[in-house]
Image (tube, rainbow, N blue to C red; front, side, top):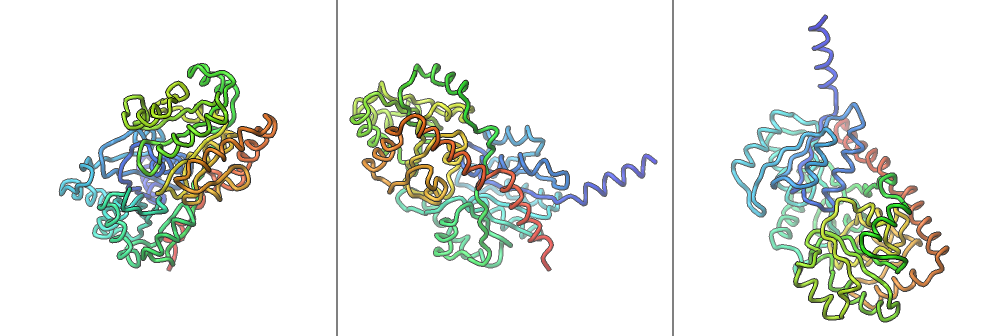
Length: 394
């Protein structure tokens, strides 16, 4: 009887859909967070077995994924460099795991993970595109060339190419990606984690020595594509119109040790109006303290997570028209052109000038929109539908 039980358990394990996710790295970022959120949903399905491989060394998202019970392997390759040992380990993992699907995330993982999976005999490969633009002034030359090489391989290497935004699909089709393989799966959001909460709002505001002042927030790592410069310029103009407004920024390298960012803030005499929090693990709580959430990005975004997260917290958003940002906020926020600080400030003023009840109603509409269109449960199902389609087609 003991042996029969072992055979049964083994058979059950073999019948599961085996997915290996290959991602460039596991630092805090939109793609990494979406992978974590997807796994938090998919791991509930007893018929799916997932594991994650990172080309780069470990990061904070790696630990979160492990807490879900999903194994994580890091190949520890230096950024921008492929190593023979890393490629050998990846090949060996594929041969050993024999996954039904290899899902890759971002250009470098699409290229490296896709080619190694093909060489190892993996039957089904799915790419994931997370960017809506490629800008030579902001993106590394290696990133642009990697994307172009992926375009050349897209007609035969992947079974499907998942993109989180319609605009990203259009841009990459123009670049040469195979349009027939594109499928849009929007990012999903956990509205239980990201939700309005008066108690958390009060706690964060007390921590930041803020009372009833209007607060405009920006959650973004410090990177040229996030365009903190335009945000600071908009903040200067908004401060002229609403003198008691304060600005709360958090994200990797968004600290008072960042000389470039602090220089811009001090150029306008706004040091006392800014709170720079650096990277936070309680973003859902921080967002509840905002009256307006801003996305100031100039390029690169496809479906920015921070917009949906802020909306789920009941915070109206002012966004630049990058990727699908304008479609995400719909009529619950304001969309303005990129790199236009005047328009960005005016959008914030438009929302802050609303009566308190009207602003709360706008936030409620924003949360309802996320719940209706961008639930994490629906996103997880759409990914599984993609995997089922590629593994069952004749």
